[in-house]
Image (cartoon, rainbow, N blue to C red; front, side):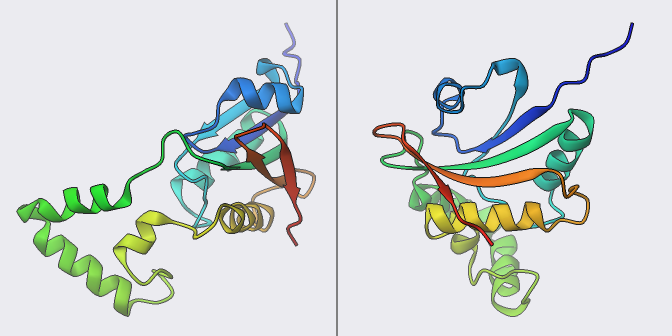
Length: 168
């Protein structure tokens, strides 16, 4: 029996997106859709585990389109960064590691392009910046074939409207 190859679309979405809303907005069947759901959605490093997963999906699942979808509007699963940092800093056994990380963020550019652990955990300042950066990293990655179309999308959660970002 010969396996029929179908072209799929990969959606990299934040935790506050719903797959059903994306299916409706893009008029796509769930069988033709692959979803990576992450906080952000922001890709900050071209050789991270997340980027490896994207590359493997492109080749293994015959992905022809990648959509990085950011959401504007009030997120339903927003991370309270201060709570996260408080939890990290209240653990005495992590004191030494925090000191090392704080030093690395201050002294080791460009390995750590952010200036603090908080900035690294928070990610991009705006949804648009995060989506644009992610699209650029994917498009310019040497292992992503040139025929794979990579698009940045911002979804307005209040009304479901989509806006495609122009990313050079």
